Amino acid sequence: MAPHNGHRMIDKEQYVIIGTAEDIFAVPVARVQEILEMRFISRLPQSPQNVLGLIEVRSESVVVFDLRRTLGLDPAEDTENTRIVVLVINGETDPVVIGLRADSVRDVVVLDDEIADAAPTSRLPIRTDCIAGIGRIGGQFAIILNLDRLLGGKLENAAA
Image (cartoon, rainbow, N blue to C red; front, side, top):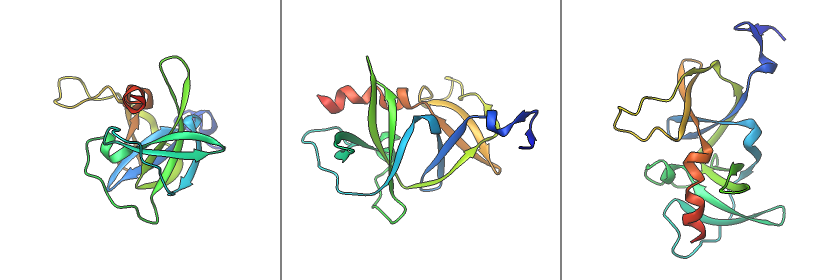
């Protein structure tokens, strides 16, 4: 392969690009087990708003989180592009498989300039601990999610 910024692209980390409306987010390919078309989700009584419920994946129960609600966005209706991304995150003691409902899954890419920018500083009035960095794809920003911080603490709430 041709060099990219002095490194071969194969040496760069690949990301799955997921979307909510016009927003672009990136999650490391190494964390993704599979991508599923939308399916029936069994609701969990008295669960947090960002927890949609349970699905079965390869004979295992998997909790599904809504990416939009987890990020503080308004919910959206499912479309033909809606997907459930099955991911592995670090729980308190062991890795945990979860599902993340996204409006779309767009591509698997190597980001331009890898992680071009660090997460915004804490001086901003936003929560930045769930942002691993800011990358770029064809001139657009892609927020690289820190899945463990974004969803890891939510597991205890979902199980309670």
